[in-house]
Image (cartoon, rainbow, N blue to C red; front, side, top):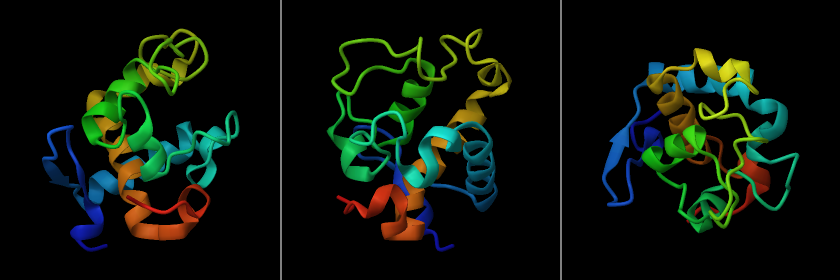
Length: 135
């Protein structure tokens, strides 16, 4: 996997980071064990209108199309408009009693999962999130 395929936005300032192959592999493994039940191939079973495509993540409030903001979501999930907490429904570190698997995920694990989600459209293209176009 080329460096360009592994490069994602780090923050809202537009800084970028190139994920290491090991980090990407860890992210994929953790995504498949913790997230794929609801987010198979970047879709969302619970709300098909809010998938993990680049455009959908960019249009959220706050935008979730960079590594730092996606990790923040895994800590404190909110509705797509950012107005209400989803910690009661979406796995997060904020409510790890409800989702015990989150207790075992360190910050590096969350960064690996977020990096995988952000890099996957570059790697598999139209197969991610139902083929919605990238920004």
